Each structure stands twice: as C-alpha cells, then as structure tokens.
Amino acid sequence: MLYRQIPSSGEDLPILGMGCMRLPQTPEGRIDEEAAIALIRAAIDGGAVYIDTAWPYHDGESERVVGRALADGYRERAFLATKLPSWEVESREDMDRFLDEQLRRLDTDRLDVYLVHALTRQRWDKLVDLGIETFLDDAKADGRIRYAGFSFHDDAGTFREIVDAYAWDLCQIQYNYLDEHYQAGTGGLDYAAEKGLAVVVMEPLRGGMLAAPPEEIRTIFDAARIRRSPAAWGLRWIWDRPGVTTVLSGMNAAEQLAGNLAAADKGLPASLTREEHETIDRVRDVFREKIRVPCTACRYCMPCPSGVNIPECFAQLNNAAMGDEKFARLFYGGMPGDGHASLCVKCGACEQICPQGIRVMDALDEVAAFFGQ
Image 1 (cartoon, rainbow, N blue to C red):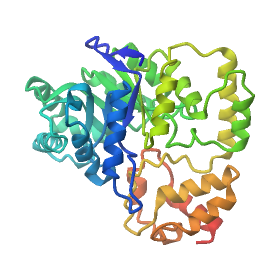
Image 2: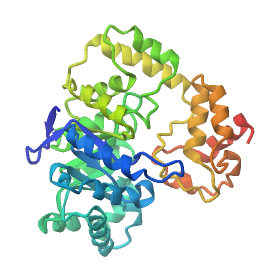
Image 3: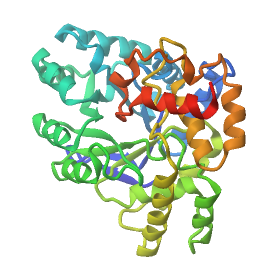
C-alpha cells in the first residue's frame, strides 16, 4: 500500500480506504453482516485501513456492523472515521449526544477522525451559531476524536469559506473524472491541500457507474496501450493529483477489493502520461453525452415517503441511455416493491436533501415517461 500524509500531523494514511455506505446486502436489502465483516477485515488486512462510515448509512446499521467488524484486534489496526449528521443537529448538546451514541455503536472510545457530514452554507452557518467549533475543540481535548474534518456538498465558494473557517485536519469531497468541476472541484481540492488539509475523495467511481461503463467506453479503454480495468482507470486518474490523500471506494465484493488494492500499488502522484490523460478525456466526453441523470446512488433521498425507489429509477434510465435498454426495462419492470417513478406525488423532500442538486421530480417524470410507469 502507498501512503500520503495528513499535513497537520505527518501521520500516514493509505491512498485507498473503504467506504461503508454500500456494504454487501441480503436479498431483503439489509446488510449481509457476515460478508460485510469479512470484507472490512480483508480491506484492513490488505492495507486499506481507512474505514469510513456515517450515522445514516444503511439506515443506521453501518456503524454497528463496522463496530463488530473491528473487534478481535481490528480496531487497533484501523483508521476509523464517522460523521456528525449535521441536518439533525438543533443544539450544542445534540453534537455530544450524537458523538457519544456513535462511539457506542462503533464499540470504541475514540474516533480517528470525526467529520461534520454533508456541509452546505446553510448547515454550516447554523452549526457555527450552535457552537460547532467549540464542540470539535472539546472533543479533541477530551480524546473522543483525534482529527476534525468535514464532508461537503455545495458550491466552490462556500467550500473555500468553510476551509478557512476552522483549523480542520481533513476534508472529504466528491471527485472523479466526470466531476472535476463539480462542487469543490479541482480548484477546491488544490485550495484545501495548499491550506494544509488532508483531502479524502468520495464517489471516485460515481456509485459504480465508471467501473461498469457501456461498450463504447470499454472500446476506448481497450484501445489504450496501457491495459487496466475501467475502475483502475478511474482511481488512477484521482491518485494522479498530488493534493489527494485518500480515495474511499464503496466496495461490496471481494473481487472489487482485490482489483482496487492492485490499482493502489501504482497510484503515485503525477504518474499518468499525457496519452493516458487523453484516453480519459475521450471517455469523459462519451459519458457526458450519454448520462441522463447525474445520480450517484448515495440514497440520501431514501426512503421516499411515496415508495419511489429513486436511485434505481435513475440507474435504469441511465443504463438505457448508455445502450442497455433491454435489461434496463427488465430490471425496472421487476423492481422490488414496485418503486416506480409514477408513484411520485411531488412532495419535494428528495430535492431538499439531494447532494447532487438534481431536479428529482422532473427527472422522475422523465423516467415514468420512458418506462411507461
């Protein structure tokens, strides 16, 4: 495993970590605990010791399963991160309440990093008024957290203001070769790195979309002189930037972990050639022509009060747009519990929380029109 440092301390972090938002699941949609624990431990054994979870992942079960995975000596080997659910905080006391409950769920007395989750300008301003800075200082001082960070979903200007507002150790941003100018973007990434923050990347493969591209894109990769999987191309593109510290991948299968660990062995900064960057440029152009809805399947919009399976609706519309219409229609028609876009009553709850800023209701109308239900 290759490592890059946290600038505030010089501590090494692996360039690959495991995001625990998409753990293996049973057919009923719950975490397959045995498989998830085995996968988390295999990631740590392979050197991907940065383990990232959060309060809402898997409807609150991710933290508990991660806690059980870190038994038997694995906690001491892991760099453990979870997040304060910023949208649920209404008082200074709430911050301590959430942190203490998360420590209990994770069966630990300390976190290596605690991030303020999914910050926007509105959430940050509210948290400042409630005393977030004092809370983070106190949690560091009493040993409950080692490092303080934030994850982010807003515009680049807001990102820079938040970077400058507190003595952060780390930030977490969405970044991949389709999102180089989205939200914080490359400019924000470089700004945070220059200010001495470790930069952790989420959604490196856009919810798996970049790992399983349509045939037209696979043809471009296959024609390159360097042979690697689409997932490896995506990860290597991110690691090529010196300002990136760690990339979190939401792996849910042993073969994904093995492939990503192999890619990480070569993930040096500034290691891609001009020809390799040109390959990614061609792939990016094709993707942007085909994608209908920029959904990453983060599931922040779920559960929908009306029963719409919003991420699956968008996934099948995108699959159809990228040339897999037959199977998209098959999977959409057989969606568990219906979940079809036509169930939408336009309550707007999804649009208030979508970190991608998608006009969800309009996009669901497009899904319903395309699939006929």
